[in-house]
Length: 137
Image 1 (cartoon, rainbow, N blue to C red):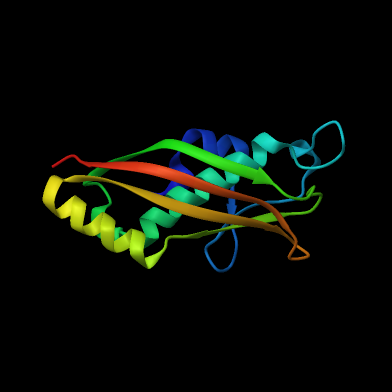
Image 2: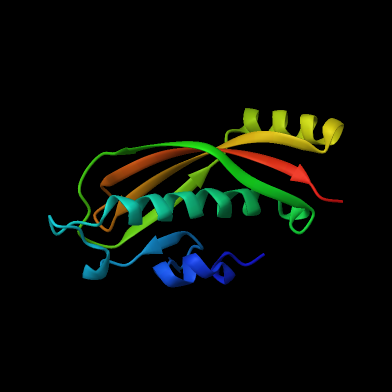
């Protein structure tokens, strides 16, 4: 699946940087009443990046599973006024635990962490997304 085919992500205007990370440009259409990027725009970015991180980590499961976010936690650290790029990561321990459980049950949870930084490298928010992945074959 191409994340850019998801209608909502098209509407929001998610983009990809040269390294394949998801980003929002600094366009004022994302700004809130304080002139900084709105919290909901940042949430959308980091949630989408967590899904993209899953696809990068487990390309062999594309089209064979139905992943859904069960819950999430996000912390807004600093206001963002410039473009913001999201960097997903999954711990090696989480990957191994997921693989073992998925192999046995054809379903498993996994957590993807995401750090979002502005163009100056300042961390503007961090998120943790708990996914539930069910095989559809």
